[in-house]
Image (cartoon, rainbow, N blue to C red; front, side, top):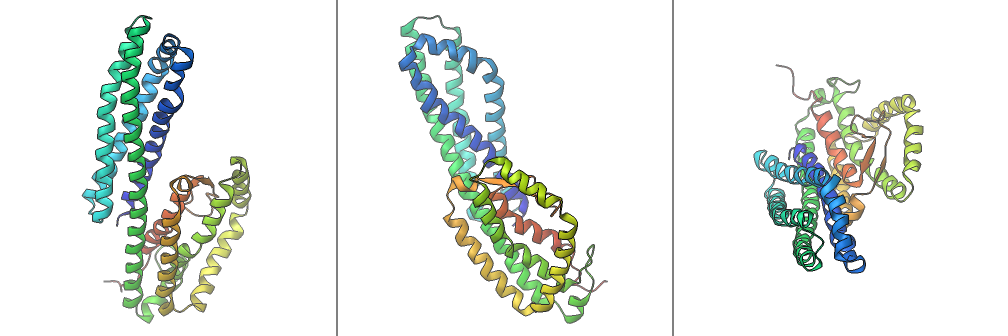
Length: 323
């Protein structure tokens, strides 16, 4: 499966999560306050907030989340993603459209509140209607977020399975001469590069431990840790190179597919057990250590990372003889 599907879906997940948070805050925290402070005071607040800076902010987040969610489905359908992934993204897109429709009913009521006077009876009726549509919006957007998270889990699982099958085919088809041939764009031979592709999956277990640990600490803790590792990138580059050279000598190609099968099965199990809240937890990473390390990566990003790493290096293999 194309990694573009997962990348777009993860961007949509972030936007959907932000929008769900705003919707739930409105329903759980803000609107109930009208019963304590009175509808007149709440209407004055809404005019200053929702109809002030909120107009542009809510519109940008709402439109952005909907566009990204629809884009994730469109990319999955266009690239022929597995049926389960495409179906889940279609459901998320449908829920997002329903949320937009509910917003289309709620927004005019808020504008009516802005134009209404301070008559308590009129404001009570308008705010009651707005609260009902806001509750519907919150439910729909929360459902969108949940379905998108499930879709991403399915997409990550599918792309890992695709990489696993490709790795088996590469090893089976490779001749001794292929394995000894230099790769394209690295100092490794094909055999060494194949081990390095496998190692990308093996190292994820350590990365998951880091996220689970630093994800509970203040942001500055992982930022300091990442900067410390960045300062040691030159020794790491040498260790990274020599490690794959040594690994390819110790582990023969015939054993590599079995190792990949086991580690991917373990990652599937770990991913299935992760709650949605944990998948959004993250930490800072040393960007000089790997081109696919971002400054800040969530647990979802880490599960996606080894397949990005795999596909990048797969293009550098020269297993087929020239010509």
